[in-house]
Length: 65
Image 1 (cartoon, rainbow, N blue to C red):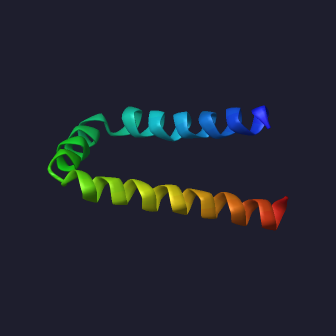
Image 2: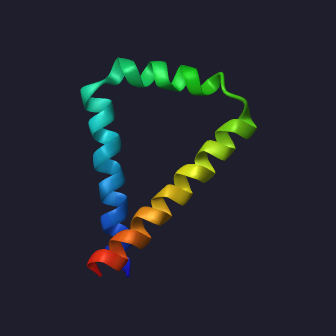
């Protein structure tokens, strides 16, 4: 179980690192745009993102696990 958590955290860090390494100025634009979105909308966006992540994990475990 701990190895799965480490794998997930590692993959997130790789994706985040790629965004910062390949498009640092674009990341600043994204942060500015996010600051203009109301907190409730950001919260809903976060919840939808979590739900999509859980769905991806559930599908991958069912298809390959």
